[in-house]
Length: 301
Image 1 (cartoon, rainbow, N blue to C red):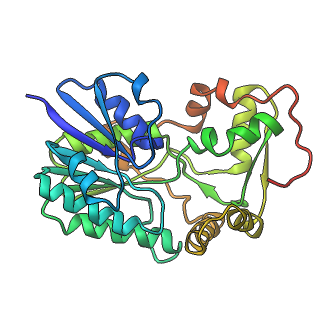
Image 2 (image 1 turned 135 degrees about the vertical axis):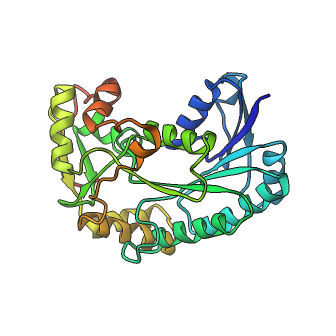
C-alpha cells in the first residue's frame, strides 16, 4: 500500500529536492503544491502530481490535502507566513493527515534576529498545537542561494554581493535538508522533536569566495554591500516595509555571527555527515563559472 505525501512550497530550494527524492522512493506517491504556477509541470515525470494552491484560499488547500497521509509544510518567507501556516494546518486536520514536518529556520524565536524568526516560531506553535504528530526542521541558510541569488553576478561580474560583512554562516545544502525531511516524515520516532540543520563548517564570505575560486579555477570576489544599501535595494524593488524590516534585521544578525553555530541535527537524523561547501561547489561547478567577459567594475549590486 502506497503512502500519499504532499509537499507545499514544492518549487523552492528544499521543496524541489524533497519532491525529487520522494518521487524516487518506493511506495510513495507525491503531490507537489506551489503558490506559483508551475510552467514546467507538463514536462515532469508522471510520478508527481503538481497542483497550484493559494495559501489564503481554503478551497485550493483542501483539494491539495485530499487523500494525503503525510505532509511537508514549507511556506514563503512572507509577512503572512503565520496565517498561511494556520490555513495549511486546518486543511491537514480536515483531511485526516497523520504526520507533518514543518520546515522552519534555525534560531526561530530567538528574540534577537527580528520579525522573520518570530514568524517562524509562531508558525511552529500553530503546528505543534494541532492534533497531528509533527516534527520541526530548522535549517540555516541554503548553499543553493549561490545558484539562485548570487550566480548571475558571479557569471557576469566574477563577484557576489551580500550585506553579511565578516559574519560567519554554517550554510547547509538543500539536498541535505530534503534528506532530513524525508527521514523525519517517513521514519518513526521523530514526532514532537525539532532538529537544527547546518553544514559542517561555519564560513565567512571571503572564505566562500576562496572556495569558489579554488574549485572552479577562476577568481571570484566577495563584496560586502552593507546593510543600508541592501535594504535600499529591497525598498526600490517594492518589498513591503514589514518584509524590509524583517530581512534587514536578519542580515544584521548574520553580520554579527548569530548564524555561525554548527549542529549535529542532520547527523542524528540521517546517520551521515552533511555536505561541505566544497562538495556543493564541485557538484555545481558548471553553474558557478564566470563568463570570459566578466569584470568586477564598480561595487554596487
